[in-house]
Length: 390
Image (cartoon, rainbow, N blue to C red; front, side, top):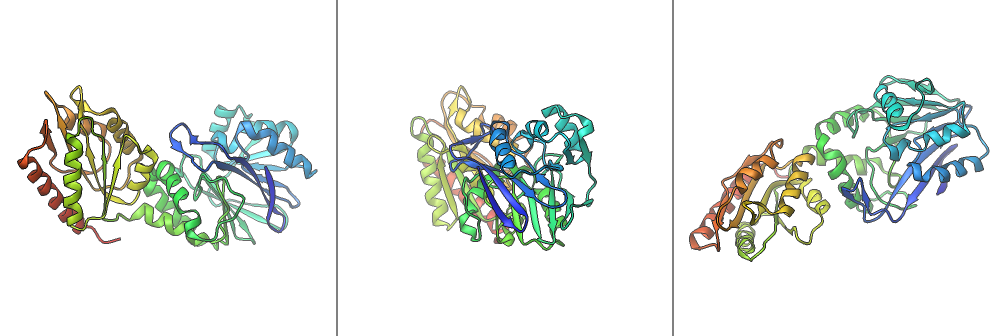
């Protein structure tokens, strides 16, 4: 853990999880992560967010090394990786009060057993004067839980953004260039924020009038140029490019032949394309690609008349995370019979997408089947031309 000064009387206390390779056993974190707490030293000392329970001892030791008392602990989000150390902190600082939203209060009681009398609730836009500093609490629900809020510190112009604008990236450096953070920020957005794109837009609007000089998220590096990450979020939550993703798996080669033919035709039509083999591609890579894609083509053989398990799990994630794709197509080969179209639509039952006519082949594809794939490629090209170029 490191204590680092980021402004006068303002410190970040980062807990590093260098080797963490997944989050919630869903999101891959190939570059580890950090759990960021922030300390404001003033007439009233404020700690913004804590850390996950396994790192509580580290956080407490760092706070004790400063030989200060903590007056308030701000819980911007009740999930354990943000607030899990609060019970430990309250044993050392029994007079500290917890500040959070009304939904956070209930969650802190239920998830962490924090007594309700220790928790003060705030309203959207409410402020707290600490001495030389003022905190403004901005409620940002569904970024990514119903309890979340962000905190704006003046006069420094620091936005403590909770999960908003975060990334799972274990590093001690601050970020000022877009390419330093884009990949991991996009991975984070895809798995955590993408289902709430409309709420992202609304909450971005709530921040527009703030003069933000620095963004300090609860995961990943501090961002010295706020426009870098804000621009990414604005585009990811509102725009759709003309990119097409083909995700496929093949057992005996027939489906792969179809993918290769369709890929060639789409490339001949100058379609921006990404082809991913589900047998050797992590699901997080697929979800990242869909953040800014217009169409998804799934190519699958059948297993007992249904989609291949690798395809089924991918479709489950797509349905859950709701990428902004507008078109979906299914191609593939089957043996004695197939229910793949019906089962695929069931797996995508809550996503708003136009289903194009599938190309399903019994056994190996023949000339007429390749012609159907050509027809599908031209239809996709026409659909993409209708999308505003991003």
